[in-house]
Structure formats: C-alpha cells, structure tokens
Amino acid sequence: MCRNGRYTERGIKEIHGYGSQLWTVEADYAVRLDPDLADVGMLLEPAAVVAKAWDHIERIGNRAWFGPRRVLVTGAGPIGLLAALLGAQRGLEVHVLDRVESGVKPRLVRDLGAVYHAEGIPEVARKAPPDIVIEATGVDKLVLDAMEHSAAAGIVCLTGVSTAGRTVGIDAGAVNREIVLQNDVVFGSVNANHRHYELAASALAKADRSWLRRLVTRRLPLERAAEAFEPGGDDVKVVIEL
Image (tube, rainbow, N blue to C red; front, top):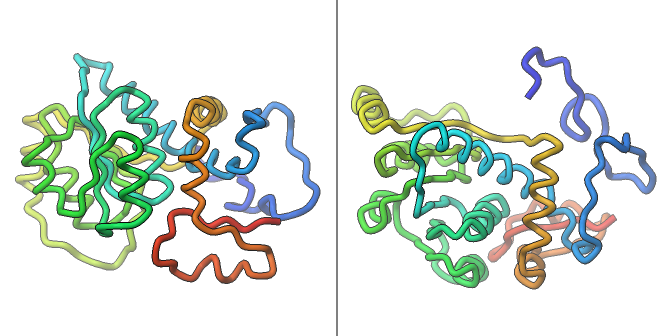
C-alpha cells in the first residue's frame, strides 16, 4: 500500500521469499496461527487478501445504511472460495460462479451452504441480485458484468488481475450512469496489512478443517515444483512442500 513505490516485500519486490530452510522475520510482523492449521497454513496469505477485501467492503458500506443479504463471488479458485467462506461466516446468502460444472469446486461451494453457478453474471443476477460482488477472476467480461449487475447501492470488489492488451466494447456512459444513479461502489484490493492477517487467522481458525484441507488439491515435493504450474483438471490450490 506504499504510495511512493520505495518498499520491499518478500518474494515480490527486491528481497527473496521464504523458499529456504532457515529465515528470520521481525517479531512485530509475525502472526500466530492456530497449531491445528499447520498443514493448511499456506492458506493464510490468500485468506488475508479476502479478509482485507471484506474489511473494506464493510467500511465502505457502513458510511451509509448497509444491510447486505447476498454476495456473489466470481471464480472458485483459492481467493474466490476463501471469499465465499468469509461471506458464509458473516451469515450472508453466498453465490459462487465458475466455469466448471462438476468436480471439487461445486462440492466445496455447496458444502459451505452456498449456491454454485456455471452460467453468466447477468443470468445469476436476474435470479439473485447481489448486494456485494467479489470478482476473483480478472476476466475482462466478468469484471464489466460485475460492475453492471450489482443491486442498487451495491459494492463491487475487484481482486482478480486482468491481462492487459485486450479491448472490450463498452458503453462508458451507461456504466457511469448506473454507478452514479444507484450509488454503487467499485474498488480494487490486492494486499493486506498486519491486522488483516490477524483477521484471516481468526477466520481460518473458525473454519471446518476438512473443508480447508480439500482446497489443497495437489502437494508436490520441491524437485517436482515445475509440475505445479501445469494445469490440473480439478485443481484449486497446488502446494510445493519444502
């Protein structure tokens, strides 16, 4: 969140990540994780991303009357499924949209008590207009559909990173008119601060352990790390074990 760009971040900018047997970190930056979560502790970082997203959604919403009932999450990868988990923990009606029609992703969504969809956002929104949309794919068409099809006074949080260089036709005037006249909010969210890691650790501690373990669909040893980048038919999260 540094505004001048003169920051360092492990594994992201200027300093190495944690792919070593020994490392140190300043105690003030450490967040304690429930020991029962040791085998799924790597989920804390994507969970921190969505903990921040939910924190900002609620801060934005609470600037005025805010009584959301329904959230739509687009994308059933680690970010999307954890966003759905935190939505379910808030007692909301959760809908998740993804391309696949069967397999582990629909089962994980349904086991949260949420509704899974393999159709487009306009079709879902006609049946269940979302008060909140968390977009976790970065697919340009879905980003625009999310902005267009939230309920009045809706909040759209963009967490997916889009590929540049492709153009999509858009009626900018109509999109602007809709956002303004319906008091909608669209914002982007990617990283998290210390408090969001604490919120994420708390959310994971409250989650069903077996459900969390099912998010990790493949575990590979370091010598087979390249295989982690090969698409798997039913993958959610692939983990390299050091």
